[in-house]
Length: 325
Image (cartoon, rainbow, N blue to C red):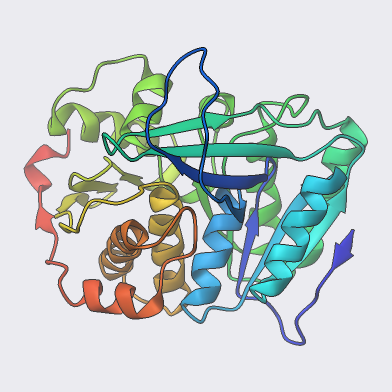
């Protein structure tokens, strides 16, 4: 493990098992079989937990990012995070960190995203990541695990992180999909699936609010999570807890790139929780951070002034206690 360690205990620690060097560019039109001439490229450090750490740091939180890194792309992520002054603990791996490509089509406003599977992590590299996380999480209040699991990582890995958090008394926030979500058993304070991820997890269409909340409450009743926040793109978000359900009105912003909006949502909620805010107020901050991502280029972290301005525009959640089941 190689660390850029802060002098004081970090309050928020993020884990990104499948980081990416995010490349964003623009072209007039995307056409098959043609050579596509693109504009200048923007490079950002990416992957769920890294994006959460960048936004949390921009909002003034004490945060440290833990992630594996390999090859030139991994070194570039380390460099870019240092430029943003985001504390990091990176674990060297043999394989090469992936790249992700986003192409904005000027003629239509469409966005094309190309996401690679990522490097294969050995069992010893996975153990090293957990050891780095345990070191960083000592004394931390919140641990956020976010993003996909790369090839080679066991599907129960996020449950192992949950067990680690419980041992250290840290609240666990999880944003996962696929096996990382379906193999979850217990210990999550806040689970943040997108609607697509929740549908994939349950195998159901979940067309209505009631059906979506019922699926969320089933996860709570099974003991997987204490709270489940369902993000639905530009639509209202839904929060399920043991006490009932709430709908959080979406903020309307000028159209822009939605890349990283879900991670910014998680970051805002986590920052609120780190400041001992009630969960509903923390979700409102998350909604503001997610909306603020539409105002930045590529996957650049949202600007604090935009977040706080939009936070002032958020509405109180709508209670949906009748939809408990």
